[in-house]
Image (cartoon, rainbow, N blue to C red; front, side):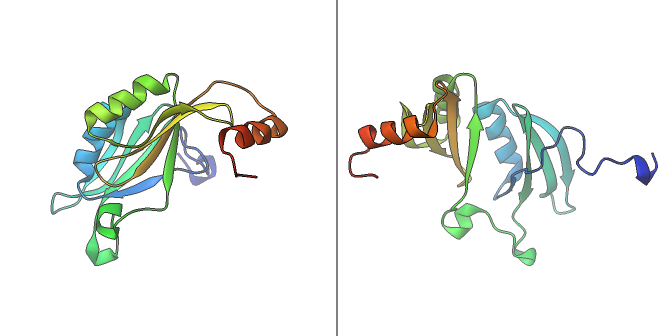
Length: 158
């Protein structure tokens, strides 16, 4: 294929794609398979046995992974003592997916509950330190309805 036929965004990819650094990317792939039904789509090992690049598909989206490489200042959240980033995952059945992720080894940060913005939503941390929110959209709501529900559900928040 000539370069003039190459798509600027590869087939199957979205404009924004999470790229997670994990201490143990191969183990992370196995966890994501068990927790979220991920399908491995790419794996490029480095000479020392770590993963230089990998990708899994969760739902309709790709998540890229790589092992930690200290020589390139590439560290995961366990080394960094946390991450300010949350990967949000919409699923058909949040309760089932959440339970599956916990059974696979995720830690509950916030149990699944109905939220003021119209989602049934819960939050997890995976064994590699990455934070995930998992949700099923249950109600379409206007911004005004969300504001009113927020004030009912979270007194003191305006």
